[in-house]
Amino acid sequence: MYLSNFEQFQSTAKFWTDCYARPKEVGAQEGQEDPAGNRSIASYDIEEIFEHMYIYIYIYIYTWILSFFMISNIVARLMDMGFPKDKCINALRNADGDENTAVAMLCSEF
Image (cartoon, rainbow, N blue to C red; front, side, top):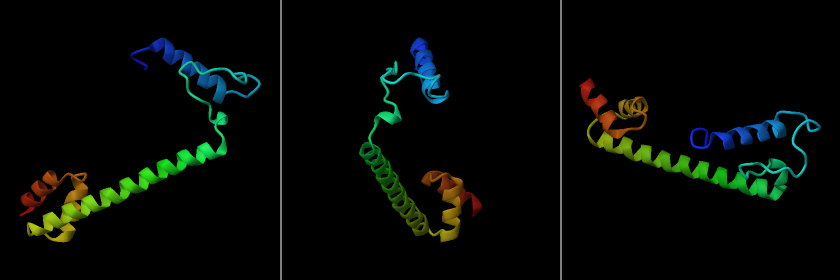
């Protein structure tokens, strides 16, 4: 939004500053609309907040489990190529999880 619509960016930044960075008496008045259409956190009830929290936690845990099994599979494939487990793990760590880079690192060691 900063590059595509600078005026909307400025009005949204001003609104957020008025709402969240100033004392309530000085900031935006109750019921004032956000120019970008965003809702204030105060406008959510507690059930909505927890519902969103559970969704984010679920996505985080699912992603973590999925990445764990993906890394485990990559380590197993590298070990099938004859490399020791500890070297495979270190190479994957240094390669930021990229299997091809890890193989290149492992091959360059021997």
